[in-house]
Length: 88
Image (cartoon, rainbow, N blue to C red; front, side, top):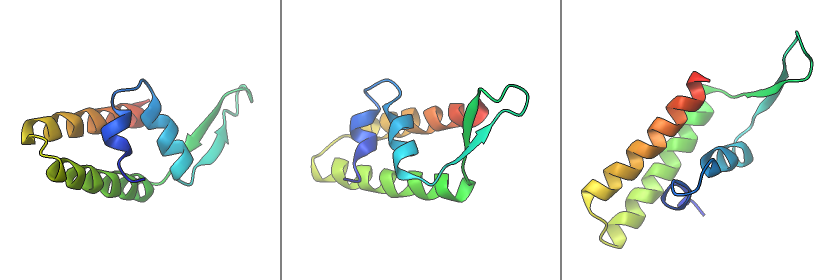
């Protein structure tokens, strides 16, 4: 099901859940506390993940007559969300 971006942008943190389930993430423990675990991923993995799903969303929107404005709005939500993840 490659159309997650169309569905998940409407549900809080669902994009993060889908990304963690569909990409190869490496757990990284905070050396100072050993309690905090974060995840590391390659930019290539993120790029491929975004590209595949954005292309699928574009096809879905074209098939069902979504406006270019609606497509752009959702694309911007997705891109802003992932930009915020990278900034964390």
